[in-house]
Length: 601
Ligand code: AGP
Image 1 (cartoon, helix red, strand yellow):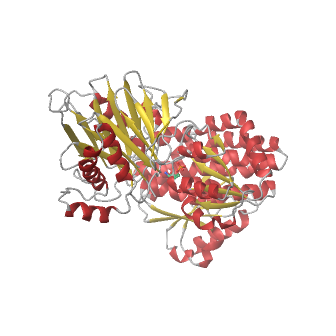
Image 2 (tube, protein in one colour):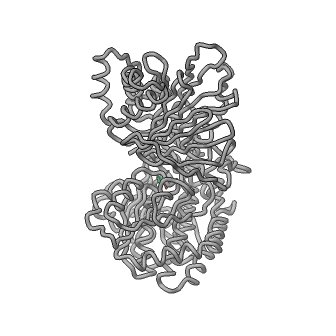
Image 3 (tube, protein in one colour):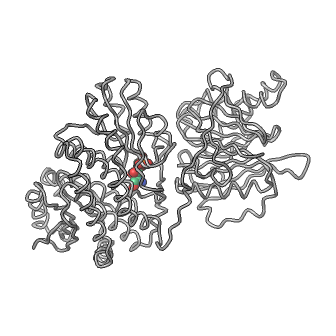
């Protein structure tokens, strides 16, 4: 989702600073970008705007003059097509104000009609442009009310924001007072305090080249920033509030691809090391989760996308290993399932970014029920990390690829360890993970990669790929299908193998590729029967298993790791998604329409 970066300070290279900041935020996914700069060489200051469709790449902004005050935005289109005009920043009629926005203004239409009647002229199709014109309209009245222009500006923004329905973060630049005003509810915004310079961004890592002294804005707060000062106000009353800045000693997110052609492949290869880290250092956090679950009356796992499939795997792991029932819901559906939550309930949110709005909304609903909130996130200081009663860190290392891989297996590793801990058999959990560590290393050997690459070249000619599994393998079928879809844009669908005969098998034709997960567990026979049913209808069977079988037309192997077999099996699915993308000439690190963290509903 959209990336935001702003700078005001002693350096004259504000435009370059903003462009570099936007590049750090590219992982959030976008389809256009723009920068607004306050030109400072003439006495009549004016805002210059540069916008482009497409990726920043090696864009040059040498045509932008020097300046101390600039901000920029990478847009993931929600309202209005992907065009230069719809890219942010947006200006008001007088060009005194420029505005960038992350989120959705649900009632923009009624506000736009009201402003058009007052003579405001709109040039874009966006909801965002309504915000800057409403602020301009407010300012015309309030500048006569408040002696101080900065106050008039701040109150104009506050009054406008309170009218917006939906979740948003907006940042407004005022060319008259050389001030930013930022307001948020829902989308993340972090303020950075430097020496003679101040910054703001969607993600703290983007601020690190200039400062580690940061403030994570809370919802319904307004911040006013100029070169010297940062002031925080309550959105509801407009009264100022004192806040604490944190000094972050995080490792920089500035990881490189190294010897790998893509972040996705690098992060697939990071997994053995991540597993080792978890095996040797997760004990304290596993104990914490164990106690939380033990002392709750009802545990609910919530996540989205890949994280949701980790949650689903958790329900099987806790049942099979800990003989404990836990429930699961995808974040966007959780709100319709909360009525049974109590103050004895425990909700554990799984999220790589810690910024997925559907999960954050789910957690907020659970907090209204006074339920306890645990979370397993990969980004310290993320929104989810900060709103959880017991935030825990996955420790998977920075995951830059939009297509999540190592964060998924890290979640599985934690769930396996917690399940065995609850079964009073922690050593068995470590042993299973150690076996999976070795199995993943074998999956990553060149001989195996060659088989997967060859298979990918055959599969790209197909329109559909079906994947079946049972029990613990069922979440892996869903996750594998997601990897294939989001990395290669090929249609893939995962099914519980038992569901085939209830309709899905109608899809199988001659040579339809049918992937079947067959670990060495109680599901083997029944899933094999499912594969045979598909074979009988012409399906091409791709067996992913710990041993070959005569019905397999292709065989991808992983070593038996007991319940942890889902980890090497998932890695094979990740590699298949990656090599299908490569075979189709798609950059897996920049999948169309997707963002690394989905911060809009
Ligand atoms: C994963 O490959 C996808 N990019 C997506 O499903 C992702 O898992 C989902 O949006 C949840 O993200 P989170 O883990 O950061 O909350």
